Image (cartoon, rainbow, N blue to C red; front, top):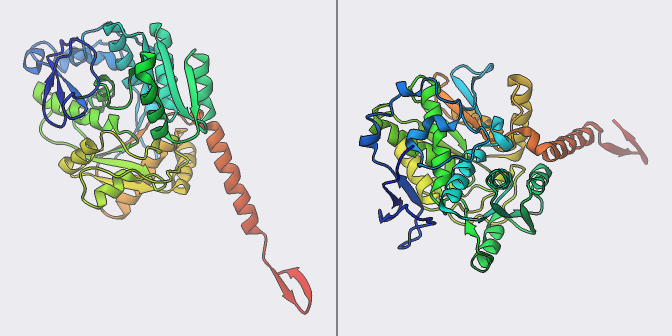
Length: 407
């Protein structure tokens, strides 16, 4: 494992000590990156040294903080070649503990919280981050305090309660949850583990970047499609690519990073299309993909910068397209994806149609969670679709000569 050299602000570059728990930059509120002495690390931690290591995210312990892991077997998820589309791979994060990619980030964050001696952690969540925090806190014997929208997928609520977390349901969005948490955390003695308001969730999520490279034979793809709520995974992978280049594991090539959101909550695509460096708060956010219902990401400035540097883009897809892709991935690929993950397929097809990408380009599409976490949501959407189809199948009546009848 790696000794932390310092924490670095992503806005001003301020260096902060990693010897005690930190949240954000004390100068300007920027998110903090963990920095290591990679020149020293690369002398012992090589690609070849990965042979025989555990098939989990901790195989990359050489570039993760030096602490005793609170692990449930997270990471090293399958990279599945598409059966339907050549040159496309599905990175199935639904096979992580608690059924989503959130396991990676919360595993690292809880590991470091225990290392620092923190006893009470709090988080606002659209669902899956809450489940992951609750699970890892249970494993670490740490209190979890969770704020979730009251219309969160039922599986997330049941999970959190089962793990023994303290759950507050909020009549609002994740932004409202964050506000309520912020109002209470000092009085309650909670450590805020919100997206990009502590440095270690990025460290857990960056392991997706290491896995993409290793599973593709150390050749990065032409594009990565990433369902983006808070965007920690996209940010983490970009950090991983920079680290791997410094370690001598890869060259300078980078994939086009594609941030995928729902048309009902698309602050990143809107900011991207308008050429802005930060997003605006999205009003009246609504989407079947709960994890994409983030009106404004704390790290939006990092996400938009990465899209620009990578030659990527941001794209929004409709809920109807998302649900159709849930069905298609299940029936054509055998992958029962979360709505957020299925959004990647809809986005890929749009960018192929627009010729932003070519069919020959190697692309990795992230399924960020299991569809089993969304049974109530998917069932409701399916029922609503059938009702609409049923109504459309009934011919409209005409009134001819005083007689009303179908034609």
